[in-house]
Length: 319
Image (cartoon, rainbow, N blue to C red; front, top):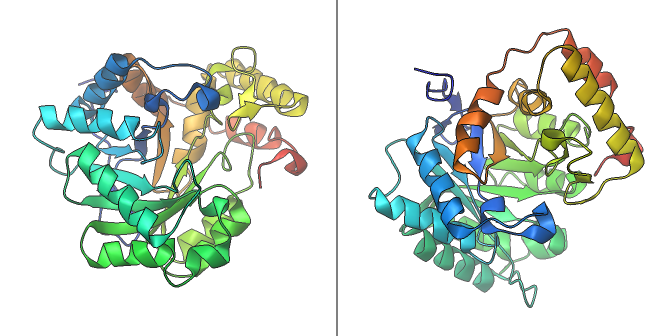
């Protein structure tokens, strides 16, 4: 048994009753969204990547209706159909999205989004369903009667989603959704990384309230995996000079200890006891095993204080 095939000790996903590995593979880049990720992903390669995930020890996969207008879900659904559905114990999460053309995020749109997801995935229900990117509407509209949160709760009550969560960016807004007590899981992204510590208080509050915390995009969209010379973007936009310089310093500190930059980026998140799972995007089948091995790389404890000191100043965080 190799590091890439050995099972992960299960972690409790908050109060859901589900148990998951410490890493979750993300399906965003599988949808081939070059505007966000900077590159295309051929469909057959994406399908092979999902097959590799399903063969491996990471029984947790995340996607969304809005990833490539359903492309990510279609590819995952095709791979699941080949093996007769999700393997026993496998956790699949997806997300309802606003209408990409009109911006509609009504109850009816939430229902349409879920129905499309179930059809593409070949499922009659999902274990975990997030409200995705609610920053595109006001909190008041999100929580209003007849709004998206009310419909998400109804979907849960109907048994179409075993558990519900909220997944988004701005930490202040996410904290308001966490405080409603409606959700089982918080997914935050690009805001708890080696560079950006915006989500620290949010993660603490969610964990204290009994929500599972899922931390996505610890690579910051790629720069903390590839380095600033190969990928000069953070959180899907051009990174400024301060961030890029800090990443160079972080990479140099890692190199001094014989640690690959992406290994440190992953384990910054997975070593945090408040976090149930860390979402990592993969777009090539060989990256599945490579990512697992990086998640298990031996990192000396003395490196972490150095990396903490090299995080970008708070005025360069996403917030």
